[in-house]
Amino acid sequence: MTSMQVENQGRDTAGEEAAGEGYHRALGARQIQMIAIGGAIGTGLFLGAGKAISKAGPSLILAYAIAGLVIFFIMRALGELLMYRPVSGSFSEYAREFVGPFWGFVTGWTYWLFWVVTGITEVTAAAQYMAYWTHDSIPQWAYALIFTVILYGANLISVKLFGELEFWFSMVKVTAIVGMILICAGILTIGFSDAAETASVANLWSEGGFFPKGLGGTLMTLQIVMFAFLAVELVGVTAGESKDPEKTLPKAINTVPWRIAVFYVGALIMILSVVPWTEFQPGVSPFVAAFEKMGLGIGAAIVNFVVLTAALSSCNSGMYSTGRMLRDLALNGQGPKLFTRLTKNGTPLVGTTFSAALMLVGVWINYVAPGKAFDYVVSFATISGMWAWIMILVCHVRYRAKSDRGELPASSFRAPGAPWTSWFALAFIGMVIVMMGADQDARVSLYCAPLWGLLLGVAYLVLKSRNPENAAFAKR
Image (cartoon, rainbow, N blue to C red; front, top):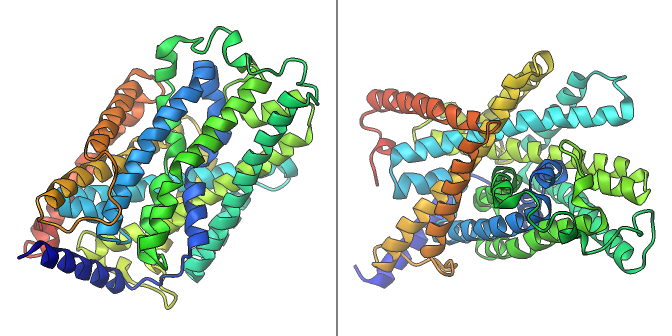
Protein backbone atom coordinates (compact mmCIF):
# COMPACT_ATOMS: atom_id res chain seq x y z
CA MET A 1 0.00 0.00 0.00
CA THR A 2 1.40 3.41 -0.97
CA SER A 3 1.67 6.33 1.45
CA MET A 4 -1.09 8.10 -0.48
CA GLN A 5 -3.40 5.12 -0.04
CA VAL A 6 -2.59 5.00 3.67
CA GLU A 7 -3.43 8.70 3.98
CA ASN A 8 -6.72 8.40 2.10
CA GLN A 9 -7.71 5.32 4.09
CA GLY A 10 -7.02 7.15 7.36
CA ARG A 11 -9.11 10.13 6.27
CA ASP A 12 -11.97 7.93 5.13
CA THR A 13 -11.96 6.06 8.45
CA ALA A 14 -11.94 9.29 10.44
CA GLY A 15 -14.83 10.64 8.41
CA GLU A 16 -16.89 7.49 8.85
CA GLU A 17 -16.28 7.44 12.62
CA ALA A 18 -17.19 11.09 13.04
CA ALA A 19 -20.38 10.63 11.06
CA GLY A 20 -21.23 7.34 12.72
CA GLU A 21 -21.07 8.66 16.27
CA GLY A 22 -24.56 10.12 15.88
CA TYR A 23 -23.76 13.51 17.38
CA HIS A 24 -24.89 16.80 15.87
CA ARG A 25 -22.07 19.09 14.74
CA ALA A 26 -23.54 22.20 16.33
CA LEU A 27 -20.53 23.84 18.02
CA GLY A 28 -19.22 26.77 16.00
CA ALA A 29 -15.85 28.53 16.04
CA ARG A 30 -17.03 31.18 18.54
CA GLN A 31 -18.17 28.54 21.04
CA ILE A 32 -15.11 26.31 20.59
CA GLN A 33 -12.82 29.27 21.22
CA MET A 34 -14.61 30.16 24.45
CA ILE A 35 -14.74 26.53 25.62
CA ALA A 36 -10.97 26.43 25.14
CA ILE A 37 -10.51 29.72 27.02
CA GLY A 38 -12.91 28.75 29.80
CA GLY A 39 -11.15 25.43 30.28
CA ALA A 40 -8.00 27.27 31.31
CA ILE A 41 -9.71 29.67 33.73
CA GLY A 42 -11.43 28.31 36.82
CA THR A 43 -11.53 28.31 40.60
CA GLY A 44 -7.91 27.13 40.58
CA LEU A 45 -6.95 30.66 39.53
CA PHE A 46 -9.61 32.68 41.35
CA LEU A 47 -9.26 30.86 44.71
CA GLY A 48 -6.32 28.43 44.57
CA ALA A 49 -3.80 31.11 43.67
CA GLY A 50 -4.10 32.59 47.20
CA LYS A 51 -2.64 29.45 48.79
CA ALA A 52 0.01 29.16 46.08
CA ILE A 53 1.14 32.78 46.56
CA SER A 54 1.59 32.22 50.30
CA LYS A 55 3.76 29.15 49.53
CA ALA A 56 5.95 30.54 46.75
CA GLY A 57 5.62 34.32 46.64
CA PRO A 58 6.26 36.07 43.30
CA SER A 59 8.03 32.98 41.92
CA LEU A 60 4.56 31.52 41.40
CA ILE A 61 4.57 33.57 38.18
CA LEU A 62 7.46 31.45 36.90
CA ALA A 63 5.69 28.25 37.96
CA TYR A 64 2.61 29.20 35.95
CA ALA A 65 4.73 30.17 32.94
CA ILE A 66 6.67 26.88 32.85
CA ALA A 67 3.55 24.79 33.52
CA GLY A 68 1.78 26.79 30.81
CA LEU A 69 4.49 25.80 28.33
CA VAL A 70 3.96 22.15 29.27
CA ILE A 71 0.21 22.55 28.81
CA PHE A 72 0.86 23.94 25.33
CA PHE A 73 2.96 20.86 24.48
CA ILE A 74 0.10 18.65 25.71
CA MET A 75 -2.48 20.54 23.70
CA ARG A 76 -0.40 20.45 20.52
CA ALA A 77 0.04 16.70 20.99
CA LEU A 78 -3.73 16.39 21.39
CA GLY A 79 -4.28 18.61 18.35
CA GLU A 80 -2.11 16.38 16.18
CA LEU A 81 -4.12 13.33 17.27
CA LEU A 82 -7.43 15.13 16.74
CA MET A 83 -6.56 16.05 13.18
CA TYR A 84 -5.51 12.46 12.54
CA ARG A 85 -8.85 11.14 13.84
CA PRO A 86 -11.40 13.63 15.27
CA VAL A 87 -13.65 11.59 17.58
CA SER A 88 -15.69 12.64 20.60
CA GLY A 89 -14.21 10.06 22.97
CA SER A 90 -10.73 11.21 22.00
CA PHE A 91 -8.63 10.26 25.04
CA SER A 92 -9.96 6.75 25.51
CA GLU A 93 -10.15 6.16 21.75
CA TYR A 94 -6.49 7.03 21.24
CA ALA A 95 -5.44 5.02 24.29
CA ARG A 96 -7.39 2.06 22.91
CA GLU A 97 -5.68 2.35 19.53
CA PHE A 98 -2.10 3.16 20.48
CA VAL A 99 -1.60 1.52 23.89
CA GLY A 100 -4.23 -1.21 24.14
CA PRO A 101 -7.91 -1.88 24.98
CA PHE A 102 -7.27 -2.04 28.73
CA TRP A 103 -5.74 1.44 28.73
CA GLY A 104 -8.65 2.80 26.72
CA PHE A 105 -10.97 1.32 29.34
CA VAL A 106 -8.96 2.84 32.21
CA THR A 107 -8.68 6.25 30.53
CA GLY A 108 -12.37 6.50 29.70
CA TRP A 109 -13.60 5.56 33.17
CA THR A 110 -10.93 7.65 34.93
CA TYR A 111 -11.79 10.76 32.93
CA TRP A 112 -15.45 10.14 33.66
CA LEU A 113 -14.68 9.87 37.39
CA PHE A 114 -12.61 13.05 37.24
CA TRP A 115 -15.56 15.06 35.95
CA VAL A 116 -18.06 13.46 38.34
CA VAL A 117 -15.85 14.36 41.32
CA THR A 118 -15.21 17.81 39.89
CA GLY A 119 -18.92 18.32 39.27
CA ILE A 120 -19.69 17.35 42.87
CA THR A 121 -17.25 19.85 44.29
CA GLU A 122 -18.15 22.67 41.91
CA VAL A 123 -21.92 22.51 42.29
CA THR A 124 -21.49 22.42 46.07
CA ALA A 125 -19.09 25.36 45.88
CA ALA A 126 -21.62 27.27 43.76
CA ALA A 127 -24.24 26.72 46.44
CA GLN A 128 -21.84 28.01 49.09
CA TYR A 129 -21.07 31.12 47.04
CA MET A 130 -24.79 31.95 46.94
CA ALA A 131 -24.71 32.33 50.73
CA TYR A 132 -22.79 35.58 50.18
CA TRP A 133 -26.04 37.20 49.05
CA THR A 134 -28.69 35.13 50.84
CA HIS A 135 -26.88 34.74 54.19
CA ASP A 136 -28.10 31.13 54.59
CA SER A 137 -31.78 32.14 54.31
CA ILE A 138 -32.06 29.39 51.68
CA PRO A 139 -30.43 26.02 52.51
CA GLN A 140 -27.30 25.05 50.62
CA TRP A 141 -28.77 21.81 49.33
CA ALA A 142 -31.58 23.74 47.61
CA TYR A 143 -29.14 25.77 45.52
CA ALA A 144 -27.12 22.65 44.73
CA LEU A 145 -30.27 20.93 43.51
CA ILE A 146 -31.39 23.95 41.45
CA PHE A 147 -28.02 24.37 39.74
CA THR A 148 -27.69 20.65 38.98
CA VAL A 149 -31.18 20.43 37.48
CA ILE A 150 -30.70 23.56 35.35
CA LEU A 151 -27.35 22.42 33.94
CA TYR A 152 -28.65 18.88 33.44
CA GLY A 153 -31.60 20.21 31.47
CA ALA A 154 -29.39 22.49 29.37
CA ASN A 155 -27.13 19.57 28.44
CA LEU A 156 -30.09 17.45 27.34
CA ILE A 157 -31.80 20.13 25.24
CA SER A 158 -28.95 20.46 22.72
CA VAL A 159 -25.20 20.66 22.42
CA LYS A 160 -25.67 24.16 21.01
CA LEU A 161 -27.23 25.32 24.30
CA PHE A 162 -24.29 23.81 26.18
CA GLY A 163 -21.95 25.76 23.90
CA GLU A 164 -23.86 29.00 24.49
CA LEU A 165 -23.73 28.57 28.28
CA GLU A 166 -19.99 27.94 28.14
CA PHE A 167 -19.55 30.96 25.87
CA TRP A 168 -21.18 33.32 28.37
CA PHE A 169 -19.64 31.67 31.44
CA SER A 170 -16.21 32.11 29.84
CA MET A 171 -17.02 35.67 28.79
CA VAL A 172 -17.69 36.61 32.43
CA LYS A 173 -14.36 35.11 33.57
CA VAL A 174 -12.38 36.73 30.77
CA THR A 175 -13.99 40.15 31.36
CA ALA A 176 -13.20 39.94 35.10
CA ILE A 177 -9.53 39.16 34.57
CA VAL A 178 -9.05 41.76 31.83
CA GLY A 179 -10.79 44.32 34.04
CA MET A 180 -8.48 43.49 36.95
CA ILE A 181 -5.40 43.82 34.72
CA LEU A 182 -6.54 47.21 33.40
CA ILE A 183 -7.29 48.52 36.90
CA CYS A 184 -3.88 47.38 38.16
CA ALA A 185 -2.18 48.95 35.14
CA GLY A 186 -3.98 52.21 35.90
CA ILE A 187 -2.84 52.14 39.53
CA LEU A 188 0.78 51.51 38.50
CA THR A 189 0.83 54.27 35.87
CA ILE A 190 -1.65 56.93 37.04
CA GLY A 191 -1.60 56.19 40.76
CA PHE A 192 -5.24 56.15 41.87
CA SER A 193 -6.93 54.18 44.72
CA ASP A 194 -5.71 53.36 48.23
CA ALA A 195 -3.07 50.96 46.89
CA ALA A 196 -1.23 53.63 44.87
CA GLU A 197 1.26 54.47 47.66
CA THR A 198 2.76 50.98 47.82
CA ALA A 199 2.06 49.84 44.25
CA SER A 200 5.29 49.16 42.37
CA VAL A 201 6.77 46.53 40.08
CA ALA A 202 9.54 46.32 42.69
CA ASN A 203 7.09 44.36 44.89
CA LEU A 204 7.97 41.36 42.73
CA TRP A 205 11.42 41.15 44.33
CA SER A 206 11.59 43.58 47.28
CA GLU A 207 9.81 41.36 49.84
CA GLY A 208 12.40 38.61 50.32
CA GLY A 209 13.36 38.35 46.66
CA PHE A 210 11.67 36.64 43.72
CA PHE A 211 12.07 33.25 45.49
CA PRO A 212 11.26 34.19 49.13
CA LYS A 213 10.50 30.56 50.06
CA GLY A 214 13.33 29.14 47.98
CA LEU A 215 13.11 26.92 44.92
CA GLY A 216 11.56 24.17 47.06
CA GLY A 217 8.61 26.39 47.92
CA THR A 218 8.01 27.03 44.23
CA LEU A 219 8.17 23.33 43.37
CA MET A 220 5.65 22.51 46.10
CA THR A 221 3.07 24.70 44.36
CA LEU A 222 3.18 22.67 41.15
CA GLN A 223 0.21 20.54 42.16
CA ILE A 224 -1.91 23.67 42.71
CA VAL A 225 -0.66 25.13 39.43
CA MET A 226 -1.42 22.00 37.40
CA PHE A 227 -4.83 21.66 39.06
CA ALA A 228 -5.64 25.16 37.83
CA PHE A 229 -5.07 24.01 34.23
CA LEU A 230 -7.18 20.85 34.47
CA ALA A 231 -10.04 20.87 31.90
CA VAL A 232 -8.04 22.69 29.23
CA GLU A 233 -8.11 19.36 27.34
CA LEU A 234 -11.93 19.46 27.25
CA VAL A 235 -11.76 21.01 23.78
CA GLY A 236 -10.72 17.55 22.54
CA VAL A 237 -14.02 16.04 23.69
CA THR A 238 -15.87 18.50 21.44
CA ALA A 239 -14.22 17.09 18.29
CA GLY A 240 -17.22 14.94 17.35
CA GLU A 241 -19.62 17.89 17.66
CA SER A 242 -17.64 20.72 16.08
CA LYS A 243 -18.99 22.13 12.82
CA ASP A 244 -15.56 22.33 11.24
CA PRO A 245 -13.03 20.58 13.51
CA GLU A 246 -10.20 20.86 10.96
CA LYS A 247 -10.30 24.66 11.32
CA THR A 248 -11.79 25.42 14.74
CA LEU A 249 -9.78 23.01 16.89
CA PRO A 250 -6.28 24.07 15.69
CA LYS A 251 -7.23 27.74 16.13
CA ALA A 252 -8.46 27.08 19.66
CA ILE A 253 -5.35 25.11 20.61
CA ASN A 254 -2.99 27.74 19.18
CA THR A 255 -4.52 30.34 21.50
CA VAL A 256 -3.23 28.45 24.57
CA PRO A 257 0.08 30.40 24.89
CA TRP A 258 -1.47 33.87 24.90
CA ARG A 259 -4.35 32.74 27.13
CA ILE A 260 -1.90 31.54 29.76
CA ALA A 261 0.35 34.58 29.26
CA VAL A 262 -2.54 37.01 29.80
CA PHE A 263 -4.89 35.30 32.23
CA TYR A 264 -2.33 33.67 34.52
CA VAL A 265 1.11 35.24 34.13
CA GLY A 266 -0.17 38.71 33.26
CA ALA A 267 -2.82 38.79 35.97
CA LEU A 268 -0.39 37.61 38.67
CA ILE A 269 2.29 40.11 37.63
CA MET A 270 -0.23 42.93 37.93
CA ILE A 271 -1.75 41.80 41.24
CA LEU A 272 1.60 41.11 42.91
CA SER A 273 2.93 44.48 41.69
CA VAL A 274 0.01 46.38 43.22
CA VAL A 275 -0.23 44.31 46.42
CA PRO A 276 2.89 42.78 48.07
CA TRP A 277 2.70 38.97 48.16
CA THR A 278 2.99 38.95 51.97
CA GLU A 279 -0.53 40.36 52.27
CA PHE A 280 -2.21 37.36 50.60
CA GLN A 281 -3.56 34.52 52.71
CA PRO A 282 -4.47 30.87 51.92
CA GLY A 283 -8.18 30.36 51.32
CA VAL A 284 -8.74 33.98 50.30
CA SER A 285 -9.05 34.89 46.64
CA PRO A 286 -6.14 37.12 45.61
CA PHE A 287 -8.62 39.02 43.45
CA VAL A 288 -10.81 39.82 46.47
CA ALA A 289 -7.77 40.74 48.56
CA ALA A 290 -6.47 43.04 45.83
CA PHE A 291 -9.83 44.83 45.45
CA GLU A 292 -10.01 45.35 49.22
CA LYS A 293 -6.49 46.77 49.27
CA MET A 294 -7.50 49.19 46.51
CA GLY A 295 -10.46 50.32 48.60
CA LEU A 296 -12.96 48.96 46.08
CA GLY A 297 -15.42 47.19 48.37
CA ILE A 298 -17.69 46.20 45.51
CA GLY A 299 -14.82 44.06 44.25
CA ALA A 300 -15.68 41.28 46.71
CA ALA A 301 -19.20 41.00 45.30
CA ILE A 302 -17.89 41.06 41.73
CA VAL A 303 -15.33 38.33 42.40
CA ASN A 304 -17.92 36.23 44.22
CA PHE A 305 -20.11 36.38 41.12
CA VAL A 306 -17.17 35.49 38.89
CA VAL A 307 -16.18 32.51 41.07
CA LEU A 308 -19.81 31.38 41.07
CA THR A 309 -19.72 31.53 37.28
CA ALA A 310 -16.45 29.56 37.19
CA ALA A 311 -17.97 26.82 39.38
CA LEU A 312 -21.11 26.56 37.24
CA SER A 313 -18.97 26.50 34.09
CA SER A 314 -16.94 23.58 35.46
CA CYS A 315 -20.06 21.67 36.45
CA ASN A 316 -21.58 22.34 33.04
CA SER A 317 -18.46 20.94 31.39
CA GLY A 318 -18.64 17.91 33.66
CA MET A 319 -22.20 17.15 32.60
CA TYR A 320 -21.16 17.43 28.96
CA SER A 321 -18.02 15.30 29.09
CA THR A 322 -19.26 12.49 31.35
CA GLY A 323 -22.15 11.59 29.05
CA ARG A 324 -19.85 11.52 26.00
CA MET A 325 -17.19 9.44 27.73
CA LEU A 326 -19.71 6.87 28.97
CA ARG A 327 -21.19 6.58 25.48
CA ASP A 328 -17.77 6.04 23.93
CA LEU A 329 -17.07 3.25 26.43
CA ALA A 330 -20.46 1.68 25.75
CA LEU A 331 -19.99 1.85 21.97
CA ASN A 332 -16.76 -0.10 22.42
CA GLY A 333 -18.32 -2.76 24.63
CA GLN A 334 -16.58 -1.42 27.74
CA GLY A 335 -19.69 -0.04 29.40
CA PRO A 336 -23.44 -0.78 29.66
CA LYS A 337 -25.19 -0.66 26.27
CA LEU A 338 -27.92 1.66 27.52
CA PHE A 339 -25.32 4.45 27.64
CA THR A 340 -25.25 4.46 23.83
CA ARG A 341 -28.74 6.00 23.56
CA LEU A 342 -29.07 9.48 22.09
CA THR A 343 -31.96 11.90 22.15
CA LYS A 344 -33.37 13.33 18.92
CA ASN A 345 -31.13 16.33 19.51
CA GLY A 346 -28.05 14.09 19.57
CA THR A 347 -27.31 14.22 23.32
CA PRO A 348 -26.38 11.10 25.40
CA LEU A 349 -29.47 10.92 27.61
CA VAL A 350 -28.71 7.93 29.84
CA GLY A 351 -25.01 8.65 30.39
CA THR A 352 -25.66 12.28 31.30
CA THR A 353 -28.54 11.32 33.60
CA PHE A 354 -26.46 8.69 35.39
CA SER A 355 -23.60 11.13 35.94
CA ALA A 356 -25.91 13.92 37.12
CA ALA A 357 -27.52 11.53 39.61
CA LEU A 358 -24.10 10.70 41.08
CA MET A 359 -23.32 14.40 41.33
CA LEU A 360 -26.47 14.85 43.41
CA VAL A 361 -25.45 11.98 45.70
CA GLY A 362 -22.10 13.69 46.16
CA VAL A 363 -23.77 16.98 47.07
CA TRP A 364 -25.81 15.15 49.69
CA ILE A 365 -22.70 13.53 51.15
CA ASN A 366 -20.97 16.89 51.25
CA TYR A 367 -23.94 18.43 53.04
CA VAL A 368 -24.24 15.65 55.65
CA ALA A 369 -20.55 14.96 56.31
CA PRO A 370 -18.33 17.63 54.79
CA GLY A 371 -15.18 16.71 56.84
CA LYS A 372 -11.73 15.73 55.68
CA ALA A 373 -12.85 12.60 53.86
CA PHE A 374 -14.53 14.69 51.18
CA ASP A 375 -11.38 16.81 50.76
CA TYR A 376 -9.46 13.62 50.07
CA VAL A 377 -11.90 12.74 47.31
CA VAL A 378 -11.37 16.18 45.81
CA SER A 379 -7.59 15.73 45.84
CA PHE A 380 -8.06 12.62 43.72
CA ALA A 381 -9.39 14.86 40.95
CA THR A 382 -5.88 16.16 40.30
CA ILE A 383 -4.23 12.80 39.69
CA SER A 384 -7.20 11.47 37.70
CA GLY A 385 -7.24 14.60 35.55
CA MET A 386 -3.52 14.39 34.87
CA TRP A 387 -3.97 10.77 33.78
CA ALA A 388 -5.73 12.05 30.65
CA TRP A 389 -2.69 14.25 29.92
CA ILE A 390 -0.32 11.30 30.39
CA MET A 391 -2.30 9.14 27.96
CA ILE A 392 -2.50 11.97 25.40
CA LEU A 393 1.29 12.28 25.45
CA VAL A 394 1.96 8.53 25.35
CA CYS A 395 -0.47 8.09 22.46
CA HIS A 396 1.08 11.02 20.63
CA VAL A 397 4.59 9.58 20.91
CA ARG A 398 3.37 6.24 19.52
CA TYR A 399 1.31 7.85 16.78
CA ARG A 400 4.20 10.05 15.66
CA ALA A 401 6.50 7.01 15.46
CA LYS A 402 3.99 5.14 13.26
CA SER A 403 3.32 8.23 11.18
CA ASP A 404 7.03 8.82 10.56
CA ARG A 405 7.36 5.20 9.41
CA GLY A 406 4.49 5.67 6.95
CA GLU A 407 2.22 3.20 8.75
CA LEU A 408 -0.39 5.89 9.48
CA PRO A 409 -1.34 9.12 7.66
CA ALA A 410 0.43 12.27 8.80
CA SER A 411 -1.71 14.74 10.72
CA SER A 412 -2.42 18.12 9.16
CA PHE A 413 -1.59 19.77 12.51
CA ARG A 414 1.80 18.45 13.52
CA ALA A 415 3.20 19.39 16.93
CA PRO A 416 6.45 21.38 16.66
CA GLY A 417 9.47 19.78 18.33
CA ALA A 418 7.70 16.44 18.74
CA PRO A 419 8.22 13.83 20.02
CA TRP A 420 10.77 15.50 22.33
CA THR A 421 8.22 18.04 23.57
CA SER A 422 5.90 15.18 24.56
CA TRP A 423 8.72 13.41 26.40
CA PHE A 424 9.54 16.65 28.23
CA ALA A 425 5.89 17.09 29.24
CA LEU A 426 5.76 13.50 30.53
CA ALA A 427 8.88 14.09 32.61
CA PHE A 428 7.39 17.31 34.02
CA ILE A 429 4.17 15.55 35.03
CA GLY A 430 6.29 12.84 36.67
CA MET A 431 8.03 15.53 38.72
CA VAL A 432 4.66 16.97 39.76
CA ILE A 433 3.56 13.52 40.97
CA VAL A 434 6.77 13.24 43.02
CA MET A 435 6.04 16.66 44.55
CA MET A 436 2.53 15.49 45.38
CA GLY A 437 4.04 12.55 47.25
CA ALA A 438 6.12 14.99 49.30
CA ASP A 439 3.07 17.10 50.19
CA GLN A 440 1.12 15.73 53.15
CA ASP A 441 -2.17 17.24 51.95
CA ALA A 442 -1.82 15.92 48.38
CA ARG A 443 -0.30 12.53 49.20
CA VAL A 444 -3.67 10.90 49.83
CA SER A 445 -4.56 11.16 46.15
CA LEU A 446 -1.61 8.90 45.34
CA TYR A 447 -3.02 6.33 47.77
CA CYS A 448 -6.42 6.43 46.08
CA ALA A 449 -5.04 6.00 42.55
CA PRO A 450 -3.83 2.36 42.98
CA LEU A 451 -7.16 1.40 44.57
CA TRP A 452 -9.06 2.88 41.63
CA GLY A 453 -6.69 1.11 39.24
CA LEU A 454 -7.24 -2.21 41.01
CA LEU A 455 -11.01 -1.75 40.80
CA LEU A 456 -10.81 -1.02 37.08
CA GLY A 457 -8.48 -3.98 36.53
CA VAL A 458 -10.94 -6.39 38.14
CA ALA A 459 -13.87 -4.86 36.22
CA TYR A 460 -11.97 -5.18 32.94
CA LEU A 461 -11.14 -8.85 33.51
CA VAL A 462 -14.79 -9.59 34.36
CA LEU A 463 -16.03 -7.86 31.20
CA LYS A 464 -13.42 -9.58 29.08
CA SER A 465 -14.30 -13.04 30.46
CA ARG A 466 -17.98 -12.44 29.73
CA ASN A 467 -17.31 -11.13 26.21
CA PRO A 468 -14.24 -13.02 24.95
CA GLU A 469 -15.21 -12.47 21.30
CA ASN A 470 -15.76 -8.71 21.65
CA ALA A 471 -13.39 -6.78 19.38
CA ALA A 472 -13.14 -4.05 22.05
CA PHE A 473 -10.88 -6.34 24.10
CA ALA A 474 -8.49 -7.08 21.24
CA LYS A 475 -5.71 -4.64 20.39
CA ARG A 476 -6.15 -3.04 16.99
